[in-house]
Length: 163
Image (cartoon, rainbow, N blue to C red; front, side, top):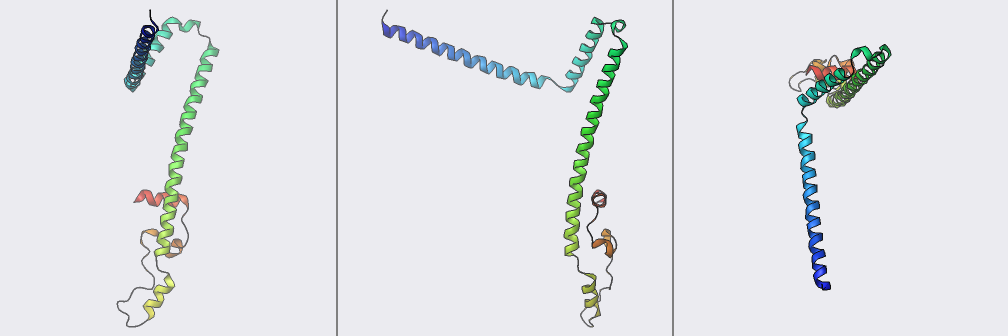
């Protein structure tokens, strides 16, 4: 055989190997995608129930000691407590963010509101048009002394939730 003929056979074999590798990679990608899409919550629950049943059938309750049951209960208790703590942490973060937003909006509103002394001075000048009362209506933010300070985070969160 000539060298040129051997070189062509090697190139064809390398091309076949590359096509096979590309096909295998595509199949693996499709399998991974279908595997992830097929695990719906219902299927996960059914798989858990079936595996629990099979484990229970393979290892009857009479062989399981009380110490093992206590260990399993304490593990489950710890798991549920950590889930509750994570949920409470997320709720607290959301409340803190909404309180910060409420405090910022209250500061903006307080800065935009006219000062009571300026309103009283405008009301005292005769003939300046319609008279405004010396003490403006407190509105939804409460009486004037409470508007001069930034609300506490709990007040801001309550005020936002009432809107």
